[in-house]
Image (tube, rainbow over all chains, first blue to last red):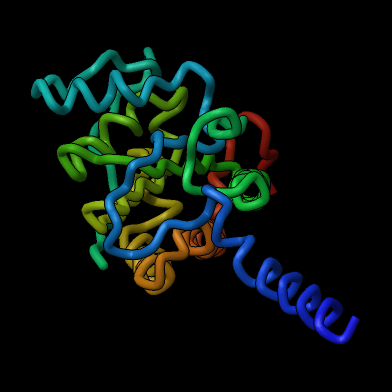
Length: 82
Length: 133
């Protein structure tokens, strides 16, 4: 009993500390390679990321414009590195 | 629409739900569609622009694209949105995000960036629905 209970408590404590690190999701660390699938949040289901990426890779940036009657003149925004 | 719940992402379900909530809240308060992308940007900003042009209404949408491997974040705003959400506001959002990204917290950085963008975006008036005062 004197060895079992402290041992069990130690085991539970170790599990509580280490278990979150064992889960796959959310464990990205800076500097690691990014081996996850691309994720697009709050977009339309028709949005094709692969098509867009292929279009830039082959130099065909002017992929079909979905806005039909609207003409895109120039995008704005900003870039940053960390 | 949450596109990442059935694929192997670096985010937990809770992180994805939080992000989606922040994006929808920003959309509701500004009338602008905010979309986040996390993944490879092979050609940097050009790739981000290509993804932005795939959105249903690119001229009225904003895209935050993050490539964690290249450590790059790109904010793309549609042509009609530039007046409502100017480039200095986008730079401020980028700074906010990169401070979080530097410690590896991509999800929190994105969420903070969306909040900054939504705070700075003004609602674009729709002339056919807004009555003159």
